[in-house]
Each structure stands twice: as C-alpha cells, then as structure tokens.
Length: 138
Image 1 (tube, rainbow, N blue to C red):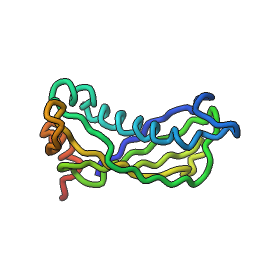
Image 2: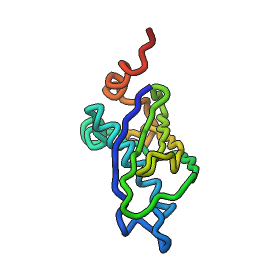
Image 3: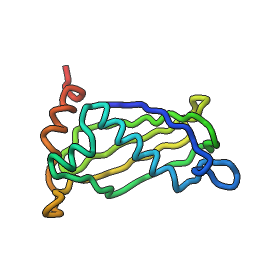
C-alpha cells in the first residue's frame, strides 16, 4: 500500500455562497492528490504522457461528504493506492479539515490509454517499478 499526503488552502473562488468548499470542486482536490502522489514517486503525469505516450482518463468516481470544508481552511488530502495497478488504477482519497477531522472521502478509478491509438493498455512498467517496493510482503 502506498499513501501520500499533501496540503491545499481553500481559495475564495472555490467556495459557494455559504463559504463552503463547493461540492463540484472536490474532484479537483482528488486530482491534486493523485498528481502530487505520482510526483512524490518521482513519476509525473506529464512524463507519462510525453515520454511514454500514456494518459489516464477517469472511469468512475465515488464521493462521500461528511462535514463542510470552509474558505481559507488548510486541508490535508490523503491519497492511497491499496493495490498495484494493472489495466486500471484506483485512488482512495480522504480530505481532512484544518482541525484534522475527516470531511470527505472517496475513490477514483482510472485506466491507462495509449495517446495515439486511444486504446487501453496495461499500467506503464516504469510506474509499476516505482510502486513495487510499497507492495512487497515480508
């Protein structure tokens, strides 16, 4: 299992009339978690697209809203891979408010697609090499 945390401050333009983080913006926070997780592994989306010719479209997203997140709060986005990817990859996301309480959680499932052919492909070997150490059992 591999887990990564990053932080983000809620901007005014991301909130609704009540000062809550607008529900439609949570998908962007999930994306921030995914992108920063991959960057922490030393493997960026940009590298995967430009050097390997692979993109990762979203196939499904589940989301649970537990408590509101407010304007100017510094939130922690915890992103977890519970299993090694194959033709699909699932990111489990938890967003904690500034008080450290779980405010939101969900899962995003993506697949790997060859940019030129637009056909599904297995997970890039380079990504799997980066992840294998976190999934080795003793």
